[in-house]
Amino acid sequence: MVIGLISSVVRDGVPSYLKSVPIPRSFGGFLELSAKEWLHLVAFSGAVGAAGYYIAKPYIDQCNKAKADKDMPINPAIKKDCKKVVDVVDIESLGEKVSYCRCWRSKKFPLCDGAHNKHNQETGDNIGPLCMKRAPPVV
Ligand code: FES
Image (cartoon, rainbow, N blue to C red):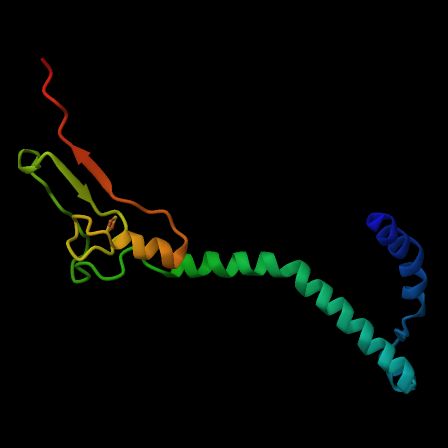
């Protein structure tokens, strides 16, 4: 029912409406438009502009988010004076279980302190730590 109404408006109404839009054939023709024709043209231009904006908005938002993600460093604050952050862990020093940060927001970096939870809430991200535990001895 709704699609039938949309179909009849677009297929039957829009073409005749478009014929009535007072778009002049030259720039000089704008000077010859009446006030009523100007109003019609402004309303038409506004409707076309709004439709274009709402059609393009998801794409523009996606481009802006991609640009913001690209401009934002993964590491916001840890050891920024180093050219490259590298941590070496002696495997023998690992306890029974340890969690390493992968969100770069831990105050105990490279260990996880749970800061990823706040980051995930604020950004909608789903980052979690790398958890390692000692396997039981093979008998
Ligand atoms: Fe970074 Fe947990 S604090 S992963």
